[in-house]
Image (cartoon, rainbow, N blue to C red; front, side, top):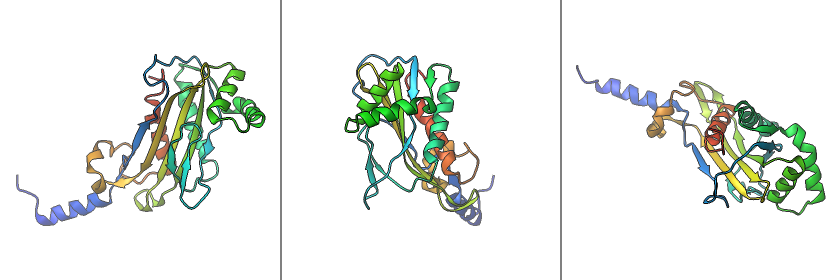
Length: 229
């Protein structure tokens, strides 16, 4: 078999340089919890409160998660982006059949009341009080710090999509943060991240939307959710 000519190799390199890579600089990072070294977390009833946008108050574009203390680099979060991520998570949690789930539209009234009654309480305490009122084992809260849509088309993008998400679980019995995961991802071309090529064909050779990145992120995060698998 003859080796590829320099011309063919040059064209191949140029092609790879613009191919979108779904993996990008993806990362799903477990959050350090108070229960890291304790017994496994067992959940039967779980409440999910409405997911929220996490925004910066100044030009630094940095924001701290009120539950875990994780610092995110933020970007513009469009209207309803938090609801989009919430639905991705809720749909999968309910379909797993492993939990009795109280969805946000049922938990919201109680959660709002708790925040009004105890506005200065830490977020974890507010979530615990919500869980007590709903008589559940755990309460899930989610935050969307970045949901930047791609600029361009699926086969030709000027700017890739980018997302940054954080989802957390508070155990109601003691108010501890027993699970959390952070997912930050910006799609890259194949040449920028050749080591991640195994996931290249996940959604085809295209530049994906922020929604598709977020959906993949939720799937990745749920891999470590207590009892999910």
